[in-house]
Length: 323
DNA sequence: CATCAGGGCCCTG
DNA sequence: CAGGGCCCTGAT
Image (cartoon, rainbow, N blue to C red):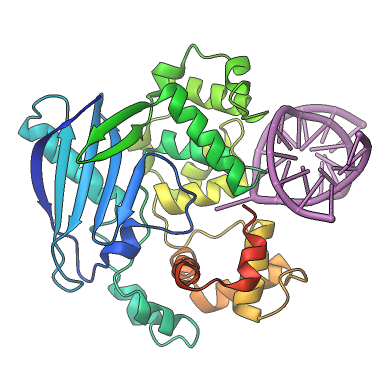
């Protein structure tokens, strides 16, 4: 499916805004629905039934940020559609986030201060819908990165749509309804294993209208947590990511899975990751040092580490990232 | 060749 | 609340 440019829109984030570190997260495993080069981000999006290609370019500075959004589609898009899209992207990319109080509280912190200085204007970002993130969370569970990558590729190749726009060829997600009739057996054929059951049941919940993402956004974190935990195959680790990334809670940090425990142990206590600090001790440290901003603080350390890894291998980390 | 653990979660006892 | 089982895959 080849798309043509249908609209150009300027998006103005709150300052400071750091383009690359916000719109590209080197710790996210790669999926064939997006591409990045410094100053330019390409993604696909399913929005109000349309399959879209998006190109986002950096046209400003950290202190006077401006993004140029190119919307590629298969038909003319009216102004209402484009306005709604811009509002949704503002939400998903955290363009309206006020980082001021976070920086005021923590930019002199001995460990976090230098990290903030390196990444001033960076924010968490989640390009996809709740449903899409749930699928990715399922694909992450109990396997290595290589396998997560292959599961997502197989799902995109079978159920996604390849979109060509602006010289890119990227897959677009399917809608829950398009997967409604797919059986567990068929999914197992894509080597997703026992996760097939979770995909079927979560897709069913969306098809039946049991999950309403816009409505959930307006609820409290505890209500959101309860709803998400009610989904088959979604437990505390996945919920932690969902509440931070999809629902943008800056203080969410209730779950520390084993491999993160190892990384935090090295990062904050400089101990051998194979002899990690107990989770309760890590939690006590985060509560004491970063209260109110635990998730956001950890995000800064995490991205700092993975950007560093792009330029020079971090030996102890390579062992933990099992490809 | 066998065995095991992995960026969890469900279910059982 | 602890612990076994689960799809697959790569490491040993």
